[in-house]
Length: 290
Image (cartoon, rainbow, N blue to C red):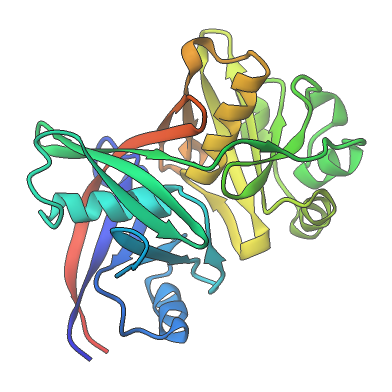
């Protein structure tokens, strides 16, 4: 097998060693699915994305967690892969906005890239909003999160929301409550299974920053306990809040990862579908030999 180019990029980062790190492997078409899973475990990041050729789009992406679970939807796993390609000149000069298409699972979704100053910026469209049934009783959820039921707000109601992946969105009273949450894996898994959701995104607003949500994400379903920046949850959150009339100018910023020491800022614009935007910093590039 030929040598492969691989490395790490910090996604949604303003400086190195912030944001959400993503492992990337280029030209991975000769790798078997089992090798991809093993490499994701070797990199031991929240997610590893493998860039492949596609007959339906400009590139095909497959992403796996360190535990070997495959991840779908267009989040930091996808944005980071395209920023990686753009930063290394594989997509041309990008002096004007360029649109590319990515195959992720059964979806083909657009992404727009442009080099602004020294860095490549991406804007990525997700699937249309789909609302699943709201939770009827928040008591099991509160217990699973280590919170009091009165700390979970009913407007908007906690429910799974989908723009590529269904995640349970839960608004709590304030950012301190977000940081206070201490989930229990088994109880949270039971709640997520019953709700038909993959992960749980808890969030709150500060009166001094009404256009920025403060969030944490837990996904024991795929062996990912806490994630520093989750585009597949940020998109649904922005789209859901916009559908409830709670987002001014159809734009929302989300601060995530701060509790983990990996502060990330995700920016979403909601048109017909949510558009996730951000940039990244390549912190490691090398050769992979198998």
